[in-house]
Image 1 (cartoon, helix red, strand yellow):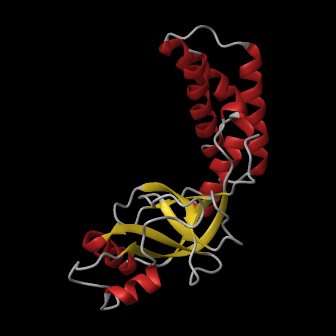
Image 2 (cartoon, rainbow, N blue to C red):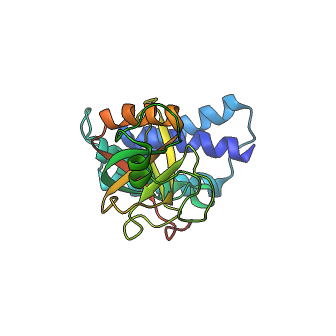
Length: 219
């Protein structure tokens, strides 16, 4: 039940900061929500902690206009996670602009190839049987990265080019052509992998993503 209370109060705190409401407004809404949820009365320590977080974030004045820049919104969310969620918070992320491409595991006799032949596709994409980081078969969350920028285990949270939904990719592979702020999304194997590569390549562009490197530990 305490976790339910915690989630309710976190949402109210976010609302208060975005709408520039006072801590008095927070207290009023908190009491209303807790009462309606059927949860026991909120202990004073947790309420004081969230109130303090509200005051701290309000001082930053990150949100001031109705049509905010998405980068500011994402920074705001990360700040709230850091200040409010304590032990239950998600891992902190850093905002970075990257570009993306796609690769796949070609198979013999698939009938069609990105670079016209099986041999050329294997030379550029690799066979797609195992990743460079741990030697496991690549999966739908695998990305190839420059290990100097995004070491193995780095999480990249971004829009899935195929579905448009947010997705978490993990750096499990690397490639000689992947340098700097660029990732290569593993699209699968064979003719279906090739089909997805072509779809992703058409949408290739520079985008803003959330990056969680292995060194960014939970607080």
